[in-house]
Length: 497
Image (cartoon, rainbow, N blue to C red; front, side):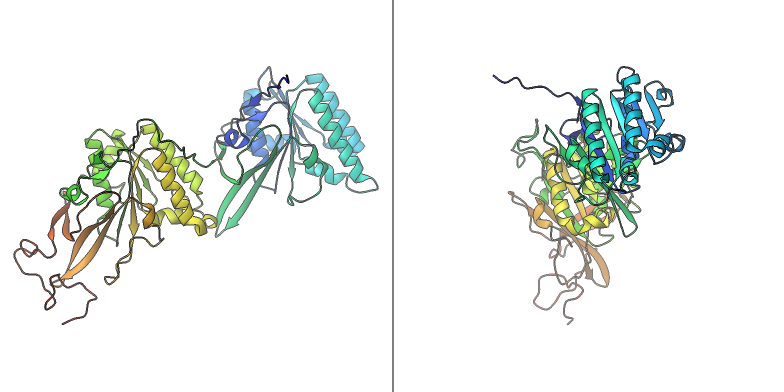
């Protein structure tokens, strides 16, 4: 019977990175952190070091031909993870520049060996490893010398039971390099600029002994350091407390007569699209939906991606936000990834245990997504709807549409089929006045009204009135203007009499 050795995994202290690594960083592993200049390699290394270093697990950070330690510390101490008290207590910085100049790789290796034997660190960092290799690139046998150095360093660090990180500037992933073979783990950082938008991505190209999360994962560097955004998992089974009888359990919309039009309210767990032109009342309808939830003891979340989020400026919702009944996600950055947006939404949903979510609007949501992700916007939207459905929330999205009067569209993205219910709002021209009209286009698996109803917007919100064909009470008793032989009011854009 074979005894399987259990490898201890270290928590890196970087949000999202442990998930990408498959549960954490293998202890005593030999790792390379690679990428172009400015992508966050040094910050990643320092954040892990300060999170992992303890008196029982001290760390040594070797600098070779990169930044001097004093200069490096000057900038790294701006981050929240930096701990002044740890310097020279659990974390020690040592420069190898003089050793490299005086004796090359052999002297550098001897110095590393001496320091590690004297201090017995559990964590060892070498920055910048790439510069070390390039300095020794000239002359006969340079490649063999480099390969021998990497192999010796790897063997020594494993024997000392130290978790090791080599940090280097690498551009070509196909480059033949001995460190790629010797390393147990290879963490590759990337960055790209498109339309004045910076997008950073991380990929674990290799991690021996464990399954990592494949693909490129966006990350952001802020005052707290790195934050890696992983895809939100969509479980196969429905969350606890959410059953499959959502066609029975219905939610009120908070607008008189709209529940009746929907066939008794919006089924719990559904996603709804409210489409219409500017000023038609989409945000007001969404605000009423959240306010009705608060009245019934439910919490909600607004994701406002507009430059001037009118939904969040509703006096009614401002009060709910201040009370904590509604959470606000209002990130105006123009370089968000779908994974970062989902992380913001899901974090707020779980914090409040929210059951109602509003995204106002899809047009603003598209602009908030970094340009590099916009070609896949339809796929990203589908992922977002699926992830939010897995959280068990009822979702309402607004979509800005140009009212062409003569055609009927629900979304400029061709995504209406992804939603369970659709409400469309439009303008009609009657007696030289623009009136607002509303209709329920779809409620999946449920009977609903097919009526075209007029509605007004006043201080009390949306007031739904009668059908367009009902002449009683539509215009204060005045008859609507019609085509000869037509039973509906004339819409702008139709042939004139």
